[in-house]
Amino acid sequence: MSRMPGRVFVGPVEIAGHYGRLASGLKGLGVEAVAVDLSGHPFRYDEARHDVMVIRLAVAVANRSRRPGAPRPMKAVWRGLEVIVRAILLAWTLVRCDAYIFGFGSTILYGHELPLLRLLRKRVVFVFNGSDARPSYVDGADMAASLGRSTDDCIRMTRRKKDNIRRIERYADAVVSQPAFSHFFERPVVDFFRLGIPSSPPAADGTPGGRVGHEIRILHSPSHPEVKGSDRIRETVEALKLSGMPLALTELRGVANATVLAEIAGADFVIDQIYSDAPMVGFATEAAAAGVPAIVGGYAWPELGRIYPDDTMPPVEQCHPDGLAAAVSRLAEDEGYRRRLGARARRLVEGPWAPDRVAERYLAVLRGEIDPDWLFDPGTLQYILGVGLTERRARELVRAVLARGGRAALLLADKPALEQAYVDFAEGA
Image (cartoon, rainbow, N blue to C red; front, top):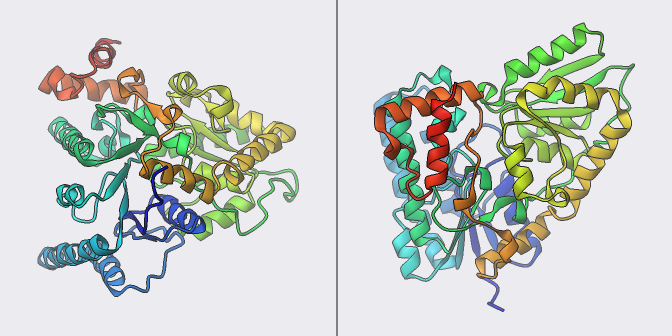
């Protein structure tokens, strides 16, 4: 067996607390790990209080460079300073770290350090989380109608992702990704869900139930309401209330993660989103830690069912986007089922997805000891509808990309069957 890596760098982003908890899991196994978040996110997950001055400085400068409202010249100054501080941080890690787990397809110095890391024989694992890998022509986060982006913008962003992935595949020892957005990878990826999402127990007892009166409490906390389908979620719940169902929907936006966790503890169930391509991610996982079941809608369930046997599918209430009302009704009307589903989800995050157990699997990846069952071949992918979009909107985007750039603009020449599926999809009614 390969030796245990020394200090591991984890970052330089945070996604729903994933990387901080992964670093905590590594520390629990006796591995020195440092998690650094330079993304300047607004949700304030359990932020590490770093003793190292260069890390504190890098985080402070990154946050300051992203502060809205500053004049453009000042933003340029801060961004330039951020590059300098990131370079100093990289130098610090090169002396102290043997391995790197990079999140969201990003690195400390914007990818420029990858040849140096290879030269110095550092172990490098990249983890992709969604919009860092998914084709922009089926990604609502990139192409939501409200953003007003053009077809040329879509093609340009798609090319940028493909180029970044190709560069990463050249230098990474392993790549971790969710199968449903593995379109642009050309070598097998380590399945994100086979490794798991490191989860922590809730601060409060999150056993659903014990509500005041007969009201069913539902929580929805969208990071991007348009992508999550928040309007349709709200309309569906209101329609069910008008039909006589005793529902109360709380919607949280842009609040601290601690506030979200507190609200989860008092909910009967949560609605994550209705256009997902993943079975369980951040918000649904946080609910699972409290024993609270989640509704996750999307078009990807047939493909996910093909990839994951029943005993490995994370337990959520699955639904097609058009089946949200039925899913809400089932959880609202069947308390026993609701409790059983929440209990199953909690067992997953307290057991296989506990931080130390997830960290063990990431350590195996770092050592090059990857279980063959963890691998997914992107060449077998059949899913085409992406995330955060209606089927109609996805077809419009794919049709526009093909009209503007032809098949080449899809960047799927290495996957002819998938490429043809998109062509057929665009030509459909």
